[in-house]
Image 1 (tube, rainbow, N blue to C red):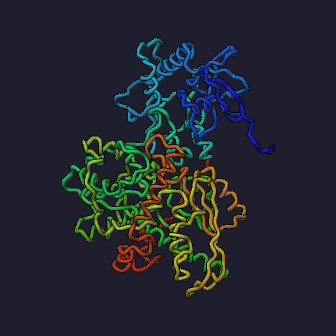
Image 2: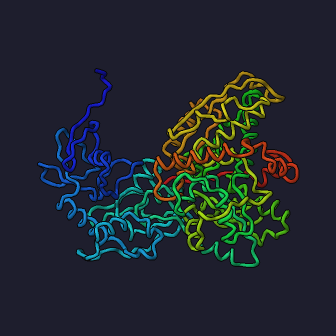
Image 3: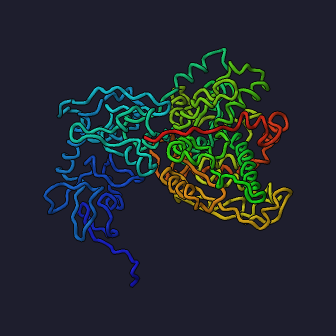
Length: 597
């Protein structure tokens, strides 16, 4: 018998015997049988906590009920998941949580998608058995991205674990004990004044409305209704495969053309695509990488390598706080969202004959950190605030429902021209590894004059949900000034989730990084798992969304950024050349050294 063979444990669940691997929790064992046990503090992304006690079960011979998420099975264990004792205990736990929770469900943004509300409905908690002791805390609205309302917090600590385990930021923590216990920040400061990256993973892991995105839906409606304003909307790559979840369709549905029609129905004057500026990012960033490699490897100049992508604003703020002595490794390229803004208010405004002061740019993003990014003071290179409002996928879903649009019955639509044409490379920006794959498709072809040698352009080593991925690409053949790359190997890495970014950056800071180019996304899975995406988000959903983006890529007419005809045109008509004077003025930025707490 192989030593690696996993030991199996025999247990009885509700009088049915089942064999499960050793160290399986009771919760996992019951789910393998299709038995549902409710949870609030448990989340598959996070470590076991056993805080909420909603998942209690009865184990024969035990003096007390057991938290199924935190109790491993044992040989011969007899478990009862739905006895009178279990159901009564769960109901009382839910009632106790409700007694401390400000119950304003009709005004809460999580109404209809709140785990506590769902359990209260399931267990018919309507008697008010316990005294209402919730506190009337004022919400923290200091951040442009995230709102925190302690009166709705059930202290499950999912937000704390997400911030610490997934993101290694620890902007949120637990303070005090017993009845005084609360989820707070460093020295109880407002969110805007701590080392918060605005990534929104706390929001997407919160089971109630205690943490939500800062909502700008009414501001956008006001702009749409204002006849003096020309309202432009841009849609991020990941939106087209996640908005379906917000409007009643299944996960991983490609609904790009219906999305365009929905936005027109909402009243936006121009419907354009962030994928266009994703393609533009590849041209600028790819040329920046080749410029750095040329200086370092051919001319022996002191250049910051590896170069690291800069399109994730949560990652950028993390770097500004935690690795502010290594900011020269970041690409100077703005994110696609922030490249779009100044181009809309200069190039596009001139083309359509609109005064930039009368133009309002709205972004639909899978990301809460984009709200913070749009508000950065340096993001005004058009002479105005480049992006006026950022809405999450969830906020767009709300607008579509408010407008009474039957999304599934919409006819197909096409993006407007000039900033609306994109490629498959732009589409895959929405998933971890996508920026790297898009960049390699273009950079390899610029250098060698040949298409990258992967079947169907699929660079499989950079795909998938492994926390840190790496790949080596051999450059064969030469062109012009890049002859230093003859037979060279380009080493790249991809990290997603800020805990993985920290590992990569420690290697960079120590001078031990073996890579030339690194992609980092703040959120697990990249933008498909962003803090503004539909709730819940799990690994299964991340994979479905990612696969839909890869399918979108394969269906596109053009699949390499440098082949986008509108990209070629904008350089000929306006930008002149990659890394040129106008490109630096509008498309590139600098970073801020921020303090740690």
